[in-house]
Length: 450
Image (cartoon, rainbow, N blue to C red; front, side):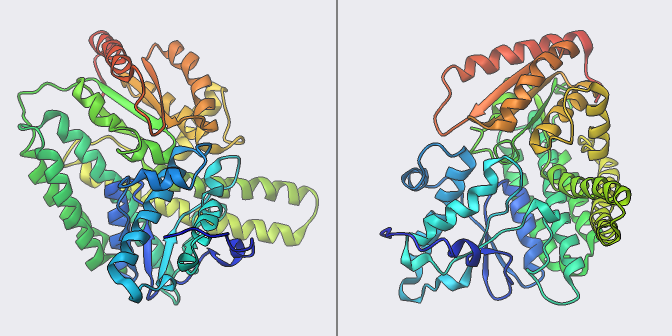
């Protein structure tokens, strides 16, 4: 592929948006392996040809078309889509048609650079004439990542429920892995088991997702849990518990964070990472929260049309949020009767804790409000250490760090910052070992409540 001068800025309007995914190949970045594949399985149940991109296969492609000033997830996702399209063109030759592909790259509003990824990647794709037909499907946090427009007909609500449930069960599968792997009877068994299980559950989503037969999917998860428990060595005593928060992509993708979870496990920790569902729940909750704020203002200013619009927004986002919370609570309650995985955070509870500490506010927004409140929640739940992982120079990650360090000192809980870029961090091994020594000291003094 040879780059040329990019197309005009008009393509930012025409080539980015919400497109009907029927009869197209929907390309999903691998933000987290389990979550991405189960999400794709849920979409395939509605006859959408969803494919999960390989990740970090050729980061030099991303380096070639980025300046180094972008944060790490931009470099990785740019590399991944260019790597896929390069392979696909070589595989199909003259049969390659860029109009057959939609690359899924969501966005969020606010100060985070994530909101500009799809615009930048549109410019990169447009620099290759043979790739200008590839559309970028952009779901946005402004409407709570609504999937409206990707599918036609009356099945859109079933579609949205199945997609969310795919993310939720992917998070649960991750937690099953983190619960089993530190106690496995033979090294490597858990990773093989989880990879096999992920394929089984993805097939279950493909078979049951369109009918929202979620109980059948949970039946398969329960069967997997029973198999997974045979991997646990009962002679191994429970280990200190470490919670991880931070930027959603970096904390969720092992390649991006240089296998942080396994590094901590290797030094004797049991790890729990904040979920992807947490962010999806937060976007619905925050839009509902914003609509309530606007409603109060418009009532005071006697604006009836805006009041009606606000009430509709509160209903729409509230319906999404409360459904998501219901499914989260119901699923964890059912599966925790089989294995003691960590429960997920409730977003409204996180806001209450943040208000109580009075160190940050949901009014400010960004992932920082979730990360700071998540650290407080972990400390209150008796975790023995907490980690904040984020891209190097990430604004929300840096804000979290500035507030979390003194806050965790007050809680007397060991704290570690882990900024990530594509290079190996000098002294990382020594830093992790020092942190884990502090974690063990906390564990000896306080035990663990979970």
